[in-house]
Length: 413
Image (cartoon, rainbow, N blue to C red; front, top):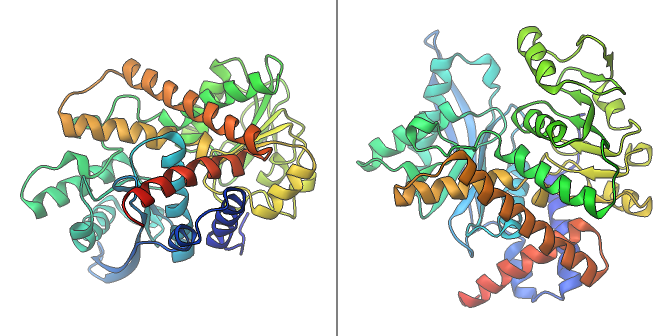
């Protein structure tokens, strides 16, 4: 659902709400309203046909009080500065919520990767690193994959960075292939962490066994979330990709749907399911609605039509502040992205520590550590929610801003 809603404005409203509750020092609030550094670069790339195209690239380094900037790189035609600033701010919040020693950053290139060949994508990726490498590094800024970027692309970037600095630096980027220092368990980590939070929320809200789930978005995050939720005993009744959606009240075999999509290119047409639009999927009568696509999906235009008992965000910024207020009035709790999708960055932290130490854990060890991070994050957000008698999002922001403000003050801000 395309939207003209400014995500950075939404992010600053969320910051202001939490700051009021905390009676935050105005100096700290003023600093948190502005990124520490913005990189805006032109990325010239020689295309396969010999022509030269120039793409716009961004890297926003929002706050480093708690550690190196950390956040993904996305390739999408609609990438713009306000979006990247909002995502960088949310990364600072997310890292503080889940308790890893990182600040917040985000980046991207305004490009449609589906229209580029593999060679062109590699040249775009390497040139972007050529332009920003002096401003990133294992102790400075650690990028990772995001929308439309892959472990293979991260491998190209690590290789390019290492050539430029004259030594192999595996810790400069996370989400890499296993052969280049990637972490076991990283592929499913975001979805795995989301399901860990879903289990906690289901217990807290006393959702029945076999509670129904609709997942908007069937990329890496949405697929693994749906797959692992089904394995955990939830009934996944609807999923959607960017082109279509399917619904079956009896439940879907998520793995078979994924195989169907790989073969057909879309989830639509999966046997035994009815086609449903992304918009209608959000309005299905399910226990748990999981937006796992792009930002600004639940707005003041459709929040009154939500029938779910619980919204659990796996996308970044899928619910606008206006929609939040409507859902709060309707007593539909929203477990925010900065809590529920933080499993990816928690595992990125585990990958980074493995790179820096040269010691690597098994998949089981990684997921065990990740489960502990997610359980602690849920417990801490729940405590702030009850302490301040507020909603989950504000509670998560309160928790994070307290941690960031403490680090800023300890540094002398």
